[in-house]
Image 1 (cartoon, rainbow, N blue to C red):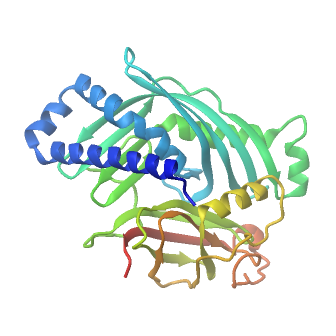
Image 2: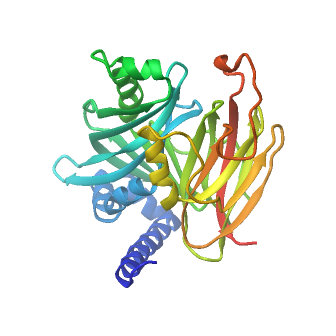
Image 3: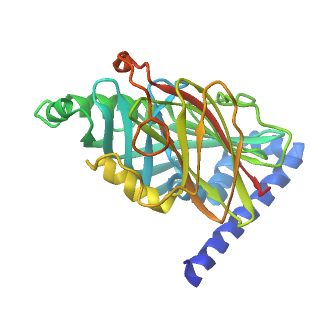
Amino acid sequence: MQSDTARGQSRVRSSRRYLALIGVSLLLSCAWMRSSVNDSPGLRWWLFSNFGASEVCPRVLESGAPLRLTSNGPIIGRFFPNRCQQQMDDTRQTMTLDFGGTGFAWTAVAGRIGFAASARVEYRMDFRLTEDAIYVWGVPASAPAQPTFQLGAIENAVVNWAAHGPASYLSATFGGQILSSQLAQGFTVIRSDEGDEFSLGHLEPPARPPRPFALSGDDRIVLANDTSEVHKGQFDIAGPFQVSDDDQALYFQFRTEGPAFDALLYPRTSIDPWREGIQTGASLAPPPISPLASFVVQPGTTQPQAVPLRRGSYVLIMDNSDRLGQTKPPFNPLDLLGAGTVKVSYAVQLGDAP
């Protein structure tokens, strides 16, 4: 249970966010004000450094970052930050983020890889107000330094021995190629009435990240709208998803290519230590508690699901193994070539409970 102090701090953070949203709504509602802000780099920096910067690390710690081989490609892994510090430089008008965390990814040769990583990146922050959204950009002010990358467990035993040997090829290529390239792209966050959207690189209004589902016409907030590849014997973890009130629900939609798979919903507090155990060498086995909700997702159909929940933080496990859920992926001699892979497009929304 939350202590009175924790509840008080949570209410203060919520109040600050609410007041910030009121101010942003006023800015968006006035075309003259939007134009004045957009035309003044100094005013934009003042607004960001005084009202937006304090929200960066809390949002970083609340989110999992998808890993991709290409900017618009399917998700092949996740990075979950567990520490974040920020430093503002008014002279250079930059913000330096020092963050670290753990994660996992999949490669054709090594299978599932667990890792820990940390990085320090100086971003030149900027934003633009449009009629229906706020575009916030983080552009590296200089070439990011090579992140610190430490391998955890590697599923393929032969690759595991080679990767931890003197050459450490996998550590250098995986840590350098994927993490460094993604840090160097910078990022765009788009905030609108529909929710927040995140994309690597720089998106100019009115561009939006690729979205597999067209979601509109209701009062729900979009928390995720993306595509992931889950190879046979593997899992993916989407989220965390924050539910702010006891009378709300998470709404899911799936569209898949490949075999049926299991979708399982858990509290984040139970899954974080389970995930970190697997990343450091524990065998893939069910989490220590039963899922709050689970459903088998069949290929070729869109299957909406609604799950009423209490206030808290939740994650969605998409499982394509015979270890966690009900489905048992069939044997296929072409599995090594990716025949058993599930390509799943999923959308997650937050709204009032049905």
